[in-house]
Length: 259
Image (cartoon, rainbow, N blue to C red):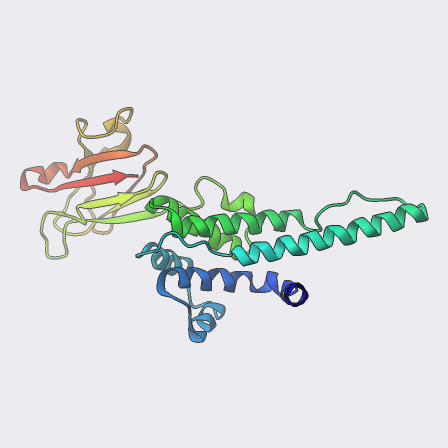
């Protein structure tokens, strides 16, 4: 009934801010692996799940078409409506008493916007067909649930990631490991000199997106020491082909897709 629902909202609203992180994580786990158990919820609340594990869990076989947190948002709207009614009543009383009045509105508009964005991000996680859109939404949702401000989670580089590629296999084979990778715009790739060096990373000027120059993304020299690295950020979507110049004849080639 409406009375029962109002009482339930009133009780749970006092705990909402403290429980937001746990609710978000459990909902995300449920979206990918079914309803979480009490043990899973306890693990989340104890902090044993990091953002990397959450991203991996949600990106793996995420179902599409379900909407997360509709009840949470409806509950917030009910509470906001009740707060506005109370505020309007209080304002009328103050006006009659001749006291100075402050502008009325939601008590915490910033929190309202954060909750609405959190709901949108979680819906994107389970509905979008784009791996990059799901990953970015997951990162922003996790940030909001952890208490970060909207301005921080909406920065262009907030959800950026770095993929790792070995130069030379552990057994000394002249290959990139892995030799094919996919990243999102704004992500970076770090190549690490592993075995059978020296190595470098040179992009094929005939196999890179239009507007990207070979010199701007290729190495100038060689990586001689094991463990030495070369990192490059990619902001243009498309397919990239690259190779190790000293070992190109041995077939040391790689492929990069930026989505």
